[in-house]
Length: 92
Image 1 (cartoon, rainbow, N blue to C red):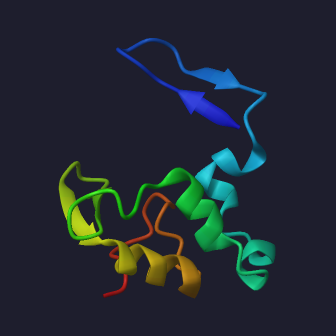
Image 2: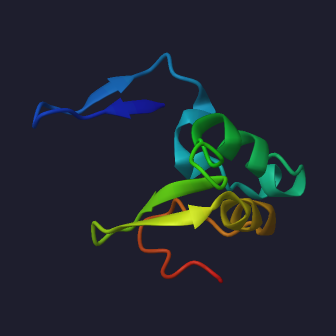
Image 3: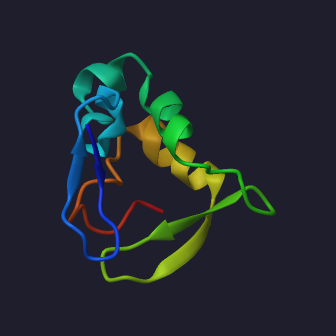
C-alpha cells in the first residue's frame, strides 16, 4: 500500500500499489528467511546512486547522513529493520 503526502494536503492512499511498497512489510520473517529483504530494499532505495556508492539516510530527528550502500546492505541482510520508527540507532 502506498501513501502520498504533499504540501499539507490530506494523506492519499493508493490501494493499487504493490504490497511491498510499505516498508512495514519488508522485514517479515518470511522475507528474511527467503533472503528477499535486500532485493525489496533495492527496488525502492537507490542505495548506490551517489558518488562513492552512498545514499542519504533520514533520521527521525530530521537530520540526514550520507552512508555507504554497503551499510544499508548489511542492515538488510542481517534483518535489522532500519525502516521501523523508533528502531533506535542502527548497528555499526
